[in-house]
Image (tube, rainbow, N blue to C red; front, side, top):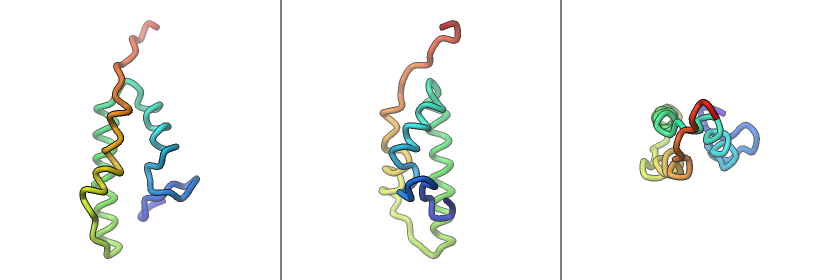
Length: 81
């Protein structure tokens, strides 16, 4: 849910644990694309926070959006399998 960047299902800060699992599945084998997507989302969330009158904590935003990505790094599956 924007501009607060909360999960529509559980109302936790997005990406919540469930969203992280869904993103890893969706971007399986494409960890760089996932990182770029999440960096873009983080940039939009920071912008939205400024518009709402807040001051983002950049370190916390980085952990929230990108800090968990090492879990998503897996080699891409060969297409013939």
